Length: 294
Ligand SMILES: Nc1ncnc2c1ncn2[C@@H]1O[C@H](COP(=O)(O)OP(=O)(O)OP(=O)(O)O)[C@@H](O)[C@H]1O
Ligand SMILES: [Mg+2]
Image (cartoon, rainbow, N blue to C red; front, side, top):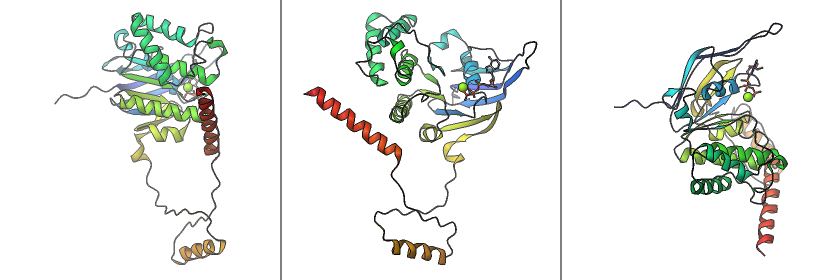
């Protein structure tokens, strides 16, 4: 049996940012031991300043560890050949303001030694994939909204068809629909056999897409495991219905209490703001599309 090489493995990975003459050093990451298996979506969570971006930069070899080591796809972090199999979306997308989306991706395609035909094919494919409005593609990036720039950043991270995709807060700056689309894109990447490591503060989204997660706190790994293991099933029985008469609601609550059921919480649900937002935007988009078709 061949033992599978993990996508990411760290051993006692530690980063202390040195202080200067009047500032203290910062221990950003302490003895991180982490394994991300091939083909999984792994979430790196933790409050602001807990070491997520530091971890990602160490994995990419953008900064050097103080001690410990990391392997990606079986090779030491920073290995130049392995780098070609890794896609990276930085926490803040830095793009050249005077190029448009297609020119930007063309530039990166050249860096990856793609020929003209490969570039043309990949650029359109990934701009479609990330859902960048075709009307926007020819405009200078300096005029893009945050979410539009984020999408170009993601297309750039995917351009070389990487095996391992590292996304630092992929949904930051995206509107609720953009966030949902990003979630679907990440699931799509997994389907295509890729491994995804992402950091995020959007816990509901992480819960939906990640197979496993870890939580960092002050640079230390505090929790690690699969979403299913970590989130126990709460034994809460729920029934929903529309137009339940007040008198019936009261009787149902009384019945439950009489039967010794604890924590009975009756309530009437309002619609969700997220649903209202989504409905409006989807309707607008559909009417724009049908208007454009006429
Ligand atoms: N270049 C640096 N020099 C000194 N300290 C740094 C440097 N970069 C990061 N830090 C510190 O290291 C700690 C971890 O920062 P990091 O950016 O990894 O956090 P994070 O988990 O990504 O936070 P966020 O959720 O805000 O993005 C913080 O205390 C931060 O101030
Ligand atoms: Mg960060």
